[in-house]
Picture 1 (cartoon, rainbow, N blue to C red):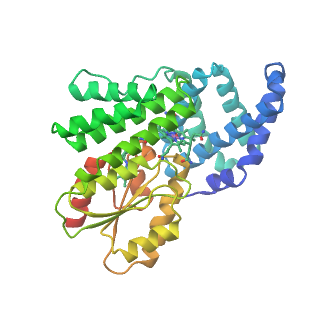
Picture 2 (cartoon, helix red, strand yellow):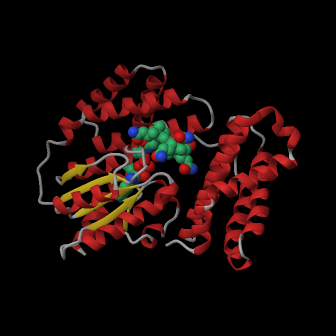
Length: 350
Ligand code: B12
């Protein structure tokens, strides 16, 4: 998937980021002075992140990945009361440095994506709507569950869920309408600087605890002869999405083997072969992990027996870029856990 420009971007990410920040600090010396050396280090880190997203968008040949990322940075900066002009100025300096450092043959595509990003960020909204809207009983449950977690009352949060399940609420509905939505809302609140990192960690840990309390219901169904291995790629720490996917397969009677976060490629491939998995579900949330997903798929293809495992991918970048799964060699993609099971059934029957 990678091309010359994106390979160079990745290899020289840090050196390029240093040049970008040097230029920016030279242009806006008075603004940056109070931030000192720690501020400079953060600026270099941010410029490096921006370049890595640009490289992924180049590889995927989809500016949406870069545009969405910049819109995200804009909201994050607004929450920190950091002027929008800082981001625009970093991008303008990025443009100048890339024009200087890249051969003219590689510039058109690079600058096309960069310029689309610069244009879009000016228009992007700074206000993100809540994920928990509506007034149905499940909407209210999601709201009350999150409120309980935010006041550090995981005991009551857990009780609310267990009571609802005992009354007959569907676990799948609770997963998607309560856990998925509240996790996304927690992300929004963190991004807009309304809750701390500690609160985000607390909510996530509590939700994983409550999910475990539901396992007696999840593992009680009948089993069919279908095997799933689910994992997050190396470096990827967001594991709840993949766990939900595995649990939905389990609820449909699949034999599932969930490897969790940050799994090395060789381990994933070895597990798929050992367990003779029908489906490998690979999850990536951070856009800069897309190449890891592609790497695992090609490694698996070199090792496989004729009974070919179908690879299903999913997570944030795949939800943004509709053709991405095809470009990295996967057999299928699904936007959520429910659709994942349907897509797996379709792939197996195909
Ligand atoms: C919890 C959390 C964390 C936790 C994760 C802990 C854990 N044990 O999982 C920790 C603290 C580790 C973390 C770290 C980071 N995080 Co974080 N995190 C989140 C948060 C709040 C919730 C994630 C979650 O549980 N979502 C709920 C699940 C159910 O949703 P889902 O993952 O989308 O999964 C569904 C579908 O996508 C799909 N799916 C997922 N995988 C698969 C696989 C297959 C095969 C299929 C078919 C479908 C599928 O089905 C799932 C179920 O329906 C999100 C907010 C968000 N919007 O999700 C931010 C978020 C993802 N994080 C974010 C960031 C920036 C980071 C950090 C870079 C922060 C930092 N400065 O360090 C690091 C990066 C870590 C890394 N290298 O991976 C940003 C990403 C922004 C962006 N533009 O990329 C988000 C969006 C927060 C935000 N709004 O700003 N994070």
